[in-house]
Structure formats: C-alpha cells, structure tokens
Image (cartoon, rainbow, N blue to C red; front, side, top):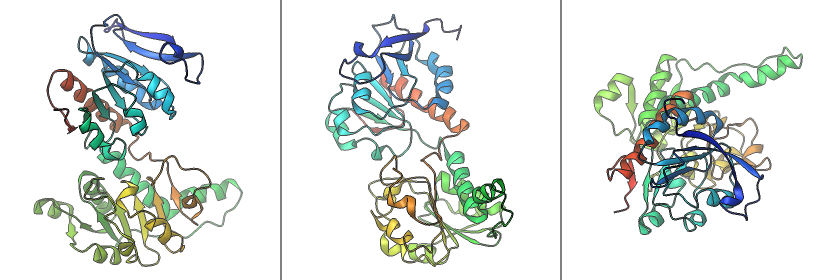
Length: 357
C-alpha cells in the first residue's frame, strides 16, 4: 500500500450519507484519494469479503482518474445501498440486484456489473432511457463455473457429502456410486463455460453432445462434441443434462416444461447458468416427481429461504450461486470492472452493454 500513499482507512458515520439508514454508528470504508474532490467518485456499496484484496491491489489504476469508496461489508438493504451511493458518479454492482427503486433514487451515470448476465440485475431498458451506461464482464469465470458444475456432478454421482456425514455419525454403510465413464452428457449452451465443462467431462470418458452449438466446426472436433439441433432429442438421449446458456432476451424461458418432459427417470440435471433460462415454475414441477437427481446453483429468486419449495425436493443438491466465486475469477472480474470504469471516464468503450449515448 506504500506505493499509493493516498489510500487510507476511514471511519465514517453513516449519517454523513443518510441519517435515515438503520445501521451501526460507524462503518469501515476504504477510500482512495479522498482529498481529490475534483475527481469523479466510484462507489462499491457492497463487497464479498474474499474479493476485497483483489480490488485493493488494483485501485492504483484509478490514480488521478477517479476516487474510490469501498464499503467492506455485505448488505442487501436497499436504503443502505442508496445512501452509500448518494454521491456516486459510477457504481460497481456486486452481489445485489440494482432494482428500479435503486436506479430511480441515484444520479450515477455508469454501472459496472460484476458478472455477465447483467439483464437479470439491472433494467437495461430503464438504464438506456435514463442515459446510463451499463457494463459487464465476460469470460472471467469460465473455469470457476465449469469446475463448480463438475463438483455438483460428482456430488450427484458419488454423494461425498452424504458419505462424510455417515462416517462422522459412526455409520459405515456407504452408498452406491454412479460411474460417469461412458455416460452421455448433454450440454445446453456451448460457450466458454460449456466448452470447459465438455473438456473436463471428456477426460472422464463421457460422451458429450451439445445443443445451440454455434461454434466453429474445429471446436467441436477438438472437444469431441456431437452437435444436436433438437433440444428434446439431446435431453432424451442424455444421462446428464447441464445448462450453460447466457441469460438474454432470446434465451429467457428457452428450456420449456415440454423440454423437461424429455428427461428420462434417473437423468441428472444441473444448472449453474441462470434459473430464468428455464420456463418459470417448470423445473420445480418436474423435480417434485422425485425421479430426477438435480443440482442447482441458481434460482428464480435469491437468496432462498429455508421454506422454499425447491429446498424440499428429495435428494436435491443446492449451492448459493457461488459457481463464479474462485480466486482466479476474482482477479479477472476485478480487472475488467476497473477497465470498464477507466474507459468510461476516458470517453472510451469497454464491455458496454448499454450505451449512454
């Protein structure tokens, strides 16, 4: 930190920003170049603790370009987020939905979203209408999400969590595993993450097919992936189905209830992409029959509560939208978000999803 002497820790009273917020009297805030009030202000109102170090190491890239104010805690309270961003010219969005009720109360003109599927977190039409630039990050977590997908697959196949609990309870019964070698994996969406999953699955000896494989023929050849044009055919012919489409207007609800009817009993189903890619309510309805082992990292509404119906599907494996959370992904995500903002302040474009112009 010595190389950037204008960094400093500040203890700032929340009522300096908004006295109506119901929070602790003091907040720990990391602020750069606080004396440079001539510079625009970037605010990070919410942060995941494991990402703090990655941001701190890169803040010097904002030197003489923008001040940064980072709150070193996590909250989903709208009033708190709005209060923290009241003075912001640009906002980094990590881990919270930037609802219309937040956009309508702020004056920031650039939002850098810490993920790819920004349409699920910010109303892009409203942003365009208000002249707000929205940026995202791309291919930052291909390996992280792919590895999490494989972790979920292995949990379904070998039930390591259950076995661990058994042994610690003095139970030596064990459970029978499901061998992946020679099984058929159907991937829906063969982008960066889907390709990485295909590559890993190939090393297990799985036979991989993919729908929506708009990739060069050479990629299919290199990965030994068979393209299938009909989604029902892909699903019906697979032992494991894994979703890897991005959430776009064209992909929202693209996997329908009718498609899910093609799942044969015992087919493993994994989604680490976005819940909205599947027709609303269709997956829960199909899983409640109890014949499809499933593992999900994404949900129609987040966070889930313990009484949510999906939590009570027998045998289901659930994780709290953490597929992207890994050290390598944090580094690349941080780099791209900072690049988005330095480009914005320089009048340039970088990963622009919605232009202010």
